[in-house]
Length: 389
Image 1 (spheres, helix red, strand yellow):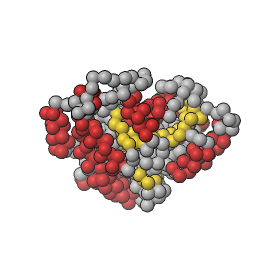
Image 2 (cartoon, helix red, strand yellow):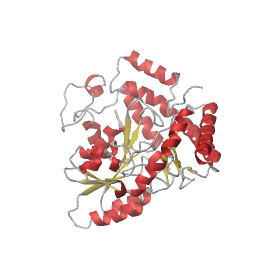
Image 3 (tube, helix red, strand yellow):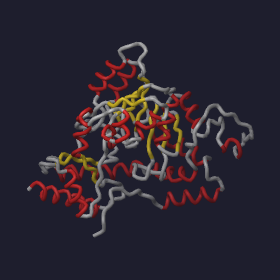
Image 4 (tube, one colour):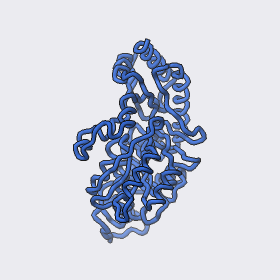
């Protein structure tokens, strides 16, 4: 029996044909397919503006640039995330301030966030500029409470929604709530462009700045300068920008992937339901907690907790059974750069560390056939029983 990888993209002939159409058009960099993709994404999410980029990391960087982050400013975020969330803050020589997470949702703990804000924002000249919540695995953070705190302390909200397409919070689509939201289209994400991402905002000034800064700070993109009916050789540099634009080749894949987004979601949702039902009687495995069944959880990840310090052994046996698993995430505060830069210890964020020690991400992607879903279920049950019998 073949080894089952942790994740695979679901690419069909629709994406292939769209890419061929782009290649045959002669326009392969940022151009008409980008504009179509951005328009379609805004319509899907319900945001006023969407700005495509070559990675979600680039999107987060542009978002912080748009709100005017400066040296020694502070941005509050979760330690339970991929390093990109925090590293973009360091691009400005600013500093992430980590806030521990909720043990059930793996999302930032709102009570601890409030306590942290009371401490950090006590003076008039505090340096806190923004909160960057991370919607872990596709379940949304408590955005009503976070938005209320941001308003109280006059802070910006930049949502790391790399896992959260499509997801809702109190029936509002993620991508329409915070000041700026950033999605990922990496190969393992809900939809993919290979590499890439999308920024959404309802703020026109942010949109204008991010659109220009993603391509060297030029006030026109190459389509405007060479091909469009209003094309002109003249342009101006409005800032020291970046090379973060998406190509029409990537947008071609994204256009067709977006059309399948709801279908992919339904597939992942059904896998999650199957897993939860199948594992409910395994007393040393904790299935994901869903805080609000009326909201849409994108199920980018299906993360179980393996008890009794048996996580690593569990993954090893699953590998022997030819099922690939992963761990999301190794918290930032125990990784070399972050712990040395800010003198951090594992018990500085005890919940994040505890969750990490038990977390196992199981394969749960739209392309999985029934036989692979059943293979994972049986492997988990057998592994659990072997370890804990």
